[in-house]
Image (cartoon, rainbow, N blue to C red; front, side, top):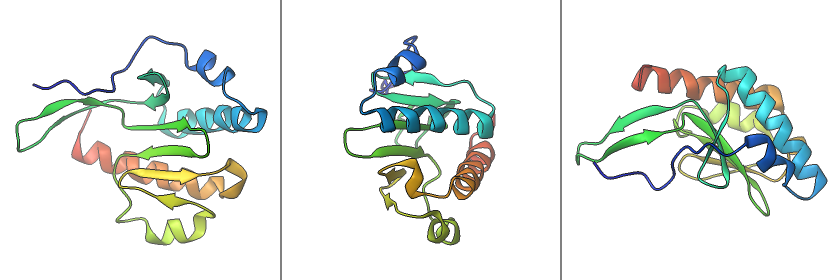
Length: 139
């Protein structure tokens, strides 16, 4: 089994977010933390040195590669927030159309600041992703 580069750590999520600059990004990071913990019911952990992750699942690919990763997470990067929505976005076209200002990667939703998006729509996307993950990787 090859080990995933990004692992859960014992580092403090609150200490990590407290060090985020500028003030608005730090405030948004604390809001995202609360929103994700509330929706998911998971307690956040640090993954690597810059990702706040919630929940965990074990994956195994046809190639034989397997490992553990977070079910949901975010990282307050220098210019944008990266929100890790592990289900991808194929099923969420309508929600994404309502969300507000964002960009997409494979399983990353990029937003500049929380006020750019509708948090009620973001909660629906997070819940839909968690439901998908629970179906694909039951706990």
